Image (tube, rainbow, N blue to C red):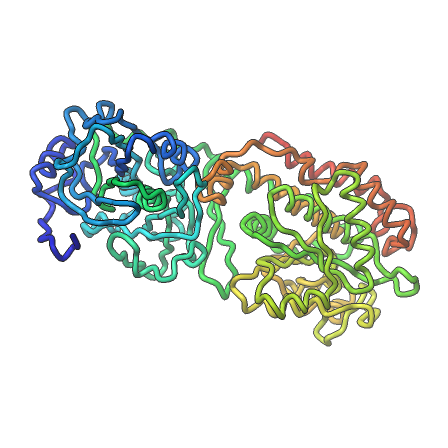
Length: 616
């Protein structure tokens, strides 16, 4: 039956003040069959999924593995009509305003009660609902527009696949509530304290990233106005159970109608709000040409990454690097990489033009550390090299695989090969990262720190960054230590003002996020360490996994999975020296980098490791 066949009754007066028993009584006599948002303030409401008993264990495991959208509050025995822990004397066949009937995965009808069906073999799952926390949001000063307007919440199918179990295999459904960005962290904190009602949001901002093409046309519920200055915030939704039943195709099954919930006698109990260290921080990481998208992590994790940023700003060469720093960009770079799927890393600065091997020892060790950390979190990683350095890159990758730093090999593509790849695939990478990569200046040429023109040895990898500036699907990150590196265009005025020869050498090609360091390798180590911090932050990990699958609450990974050990670092530099790669300042083959001995770099690496593993 469609909505057009119902003459909707207005909700009873002051529905927020109704007792659950009174609300169920009104519903039971078919006195109301609309959405229950705003009913019975402070009490838990639940989604309903009713399945043949032979599917109950399979569905229970599906819910366990996808506890964000499907938190189980009670599971009945076969044929049980009530839910004693949730409501005394209730009969599930008639205490929900409206039901949907499914046959072999198809929605065949909706109705006001299920009393005409044989019940002996059916198991009822009572699943947490976000309506339960709406009053907690309003008490916290966060308006809930659907509740205030008496409408159903907006719900959408997404591109986020739930962890499949047996015949249950579907994508998640989410609900959406808009709010000002400055209130989102509070909303995260409040709802994180309600794990039985889906917990904290799973997505903040850009609906397209969830596969939602038109936010004004929800798949379930009513449209919700998003006012200027507001951001859409999405929670996992129990209507995921509807999609799960469709996928499993049982002979006969039932659910509540989206938005029309079972109201329990149990008051919502919020867990303790997080401490200051664990309080959520909401960080926008979208680029200017893209709709706003934000990530989430704890205050403690943010502070660690800020300490990493401070630690790499030592300026042993006195170049003026601290003047170039873009505060919070290391944090945003790490979060961007955490959300990325496929990352391309490029490095290479042919500053030693008088030698057959023109590359220096800065850049590649940091690039390999970033690759190590990305592999640790399951990302696809590709190196982009100049044609002349491809075999060198491959040899160094093999070295780090052999010594255990890299968990697997990394493909190396020359720039011409990448250009060919782009001719077939519009955006093969969703993140481009350059570290100590020669960057094109305002004159279209490439220069060393002393202003020497090295353009003949540089392939125009910069073009990938330039083209990405107008592509909202690709984020760029630059790591450098002097101002002439790819991505440093973001700080070009500062380079021209504070760096020797800045007017000549300043890179003109910008990056979305820029990591500045006293030595570029240190910047690479900081990015790798920051990825370890966000990977081991439970708040962030739940968010990046959208609260589905077993990955949402993984065991912490060792820092050794993200950063090379001292021995691995020393072995890599020794191997680079055997390939003729020299210190860019002293030209020596003694494992030094930027004129600093190996021990100085190992000390910095240990300092960064200590920050990552510190308890506070």
